[in-house]
Picture 1: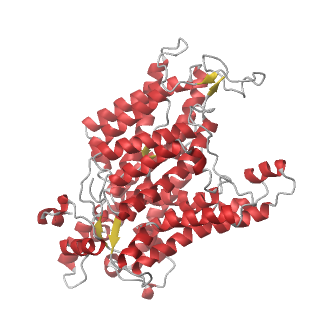
Picture 2 (picture 1 turned 135 degrees about the horizontal axis):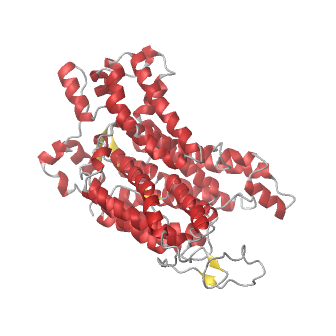
Picture 3 (picture 1 turned 180 degrees about the vertical axis):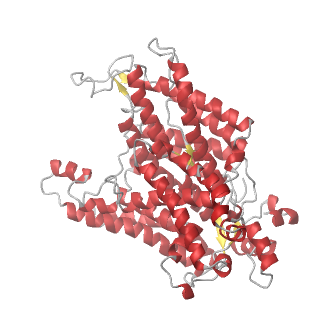
Amino acid sequence: MTNFNTKTVAVSFFLFIAVIAPTITFGAVYAKATNNYIGAVELLLATAWCGIFYSLVSGQPMMINGGTGPVLTFQAVCYDLAKQLDVPFLTFNAWIGIWVCFYQLTAAFFDFNRLIKKATRFTDETFALLIVSIFLLGAIGNPSSKVGLFHYFGTDHPHHEDMLEEDATYDYMTVALLSLILGLGTAFFAIGLRQIRSSAFCCSDYARTVITDFAITISVVVMTALRHTVFEDVQIEELNVPDTFATSFTCCTEDCRDYWPTDCPDQAEPWGRRPWIVDLFDLNGNTEVIFIAAALGIPAFILTFLDNGITWHIVNHPSNRLAHGDAYNYDTVVSAVMVLVNSLMGLPWLVASTVPCIMHITAMQEKDNKGEVKYIQESRLTGLFTHGLVLACIFALSVIKLIPLPVLYGVFLFMGLVALPGQQFYQRFILLFQQPSKIDKNHYTTHIPINRIHKYTMFQFLFFGIVCVVREIKSISIAFPVMVLLCIPARLYLHPRLFSKDELTLLDGSPEEIERWLLKNDPEGEAIEKPSKSAQEEHIAQNGLKLPDSINDDDEVAHA
């Protein structure tokens, strides 16, 4: 519970905004895919309790859990299968979750995570860039759906169609233009506020630090206030937030098999809502469903295991300078408990969410003028505060409705744009369009011919493209984490045939491996800067922070 300061509070508000928007959006998609058995309220509750629980008991508390597309797709498939088997979906889903829990506990006991630990920067950044691109496309405009700012300029946008039915004088171009202004304004105003930290503005370094830390929160508040004051008459799209805290499925009858009012349009009032606890033995006489669930639990386990493991590996990469250490097997047990409880309550399964995790790490880091990480504040408080706010907003859903949806698109755009520059894959991709003599010098551009760097980048881009294609094809999208996993054997067995050991060390090695290579082969060159205790103490002296006890020992600082 160390590092309670303004940065911790600021990052908590930022993560709350970054978590709440996709949670409500995913909740609406869940409701459509499962006939409202799982909806926004269920996802909000799962996000809140899992986040609080994980922040308190997890091995690596810098993780942020949330709903993801592959898990949503799998549970939608389970809903369709439940209808074919003539069993209640939530009962079927609960039995699959029980088996997933069992498989995760087995994986933790036998250390299946040792496979994940073989991943390198090649696998991590292929997966990370995929997730970042999803956030960017979701903000700007996804070609495969009507999500994003630029889709507002089409007359067939669902929001425009609904508003035209209510108001014949509705002007969709006005709404589209204001939505674009609010979205881009949110992102770039926040990016501008982040630059104040290294500027001469404001009266002190502390003031500049506070403004930088609260950048995205300030931006969201300003743009939301702008919408509700200057442009209050423009009918901007808002979040589809439920009105009350209750289960999403309203029942026609006591057995809760039919959804009111869709399945019983002649009935004036619903019988009630489905209970929070799932009846495991409501199998409609089909006891063999338990064993069918055991078989389906295997791909579900692979899905959750890979989603968690790859994100954990990205966060625990040595370049992030985390001193707390990893806990793959222990965190797998924690994840198993969360899947079990959510299954029994009819809540969606949550896994490690890559972009919020990256943003959490990035927001808690302190970097020098060269972009090198000097120090990172590690704390359980950010996760605890963030998900405490999510829990609180469940009982104040009307407040969340005040935030326009385009502003949240701006938050997604901000998250993607801020996460991109830190990816070496993205940096090498940009090199493809730069004049070789003007390229910035670093450890790999100095020692590797530029054509070999381009060859490595294009090879990685090929794998990135394959993963993207698999993800976009709905019939096979559930297998995309397996495609990411295949990057590991490709790196271990195919890369050494195409690239030399030195090239792979400089392009794909850990900071320690690169440092050793430079000391051996280029002792006169610029070594990779390591964080020193004096740099940490200088940072703490400037910002009034407390140095965690775990970093006071010289040996631990050197290890970190």
